[in-house]
Amino acid sequence: MRINYESIVKDTDPILRNKSVPIDVPLSHKHTALAKRMLRYVKDSRDEEKAEKYQLRPAVGLAAPQVGEFVHIIMVMIDTEDDQPKSYLLANPKIIAHSVQQAALKGGEGCLSVEIVHEGFVKRSARITVKAYDILSQQEVLLKEHGYAAIVIQHEIDHLNGILFYDRIDANNPWAMSENMIVIE
Image (cartoon, rainbow, N blue to C red; front, side, top):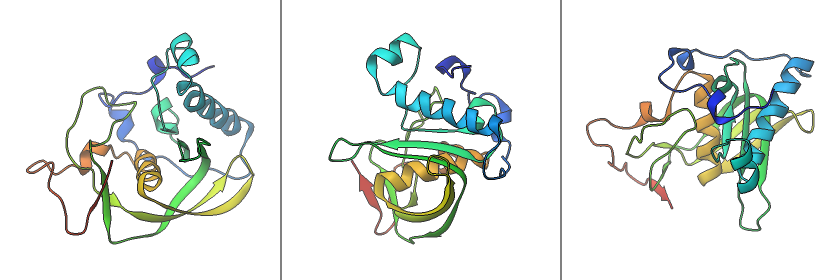
């Protein structure tokens, strides 16, 4: 079954706060099929014609809990300067190292599961190292990312732990900057 925007679990549903569980690797047929559907959603959502045809809201990432599956699978597809998107389809991603320096997106973050705008900086680590199982290459990987890619990966990993981006916004001072924080355009 194809994932479309209507099938995305919204933040008004308390199940999105559930914690997900790691999965066995190599993946079962069920988890492989789920990962492929997630990849298709993100990839097709970035194609204007397919997005309209299949009712897809554009995405750079998707986590299994957002489609009602509480397992450790995330999909991330980020544009790069050479117009070749960087794609990660990961099982059991775990941040094993991170910088003290923080980063945030200038305009804040958004999410397929969140229909209401939540303004403010979502402070995250500027650099991360992630250990995961790469579903596409079928091997364990160690990823080192910084800036926008690091922010997107952390956003998707948060979903695996029942955390939404606006949980990380300072309610008293949403646009407060921390010392040495990088603001990404």
